[in-house]
Image: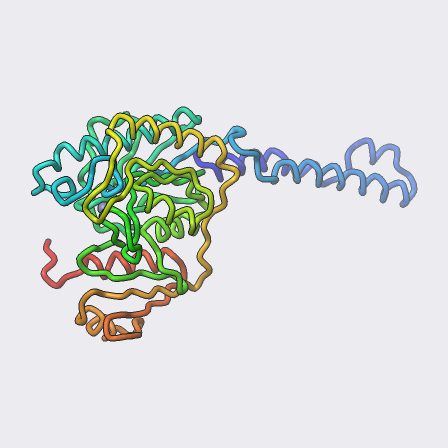
Length: 339
Ligand SMILES: [Zn+2]
């Protein structure tokens, strides 16, 4: 159900044009201008009170569908530690897909426990085709594959009440964390918004914030959860593994992690009114540091891109949607694209 349409309906009910004309009582009995003025004032006050009540933001949960957006990555899933789990050529990828699917389903269950009525899940790791979609409830929508204008947040809009991040990892500028990287471990050394180095959780929270949607939960290793909390504040967190190094962790079992995620997603949504959207002020200055020289050199051929150092460029977007499209473009475009 569309939140805007719902409130429009309720507003329309109170915008009765008759309410703005003098009532019959007034016509019959009011004689003096002073009486008319007093009556008009009373009518206006009553109208303002009724309108005010109709237009006030409703308290959490009251009559509004609870739409939840769930973005799922893989590096922060319990048991996932190396490339052996993270891609189709890894000997344990098929098994890791079931772990990832299990954690996404646990987040859905936790959201349902909290009263969620609509859920969109984005399959946001690697080829975007890791989740086993036939295991999902039939009323859930799943965003798959690339490219997507809103990257790991494709499908979000202002009708959602909350965003949930599952299986997330630390940023490329973090000195710790399993598989710590930002967007591309092969190509990017840093991604900053308005001068602040961001993990994927920060970029994605800023996209959600562009639509007024707060992030309420994150799961991953301890480093990813801590890093996100430092940036976004006290979001609910589920630490499913302790990072030991880039390719090592002390991990929970999938089943234990799923239980933890379900409980904390439920708790997060239960106190969703405590969270604020993460707003990055527009226009947004995006700074990208590449691991290699030539991407910065070539991108600076574009008049909208400024080269800031040998390996870095700057792009100023009018908002996070434009920044997201630019990031998706520089990560996906290559001249040999086909079809
Ligand atoms: Zn990933």
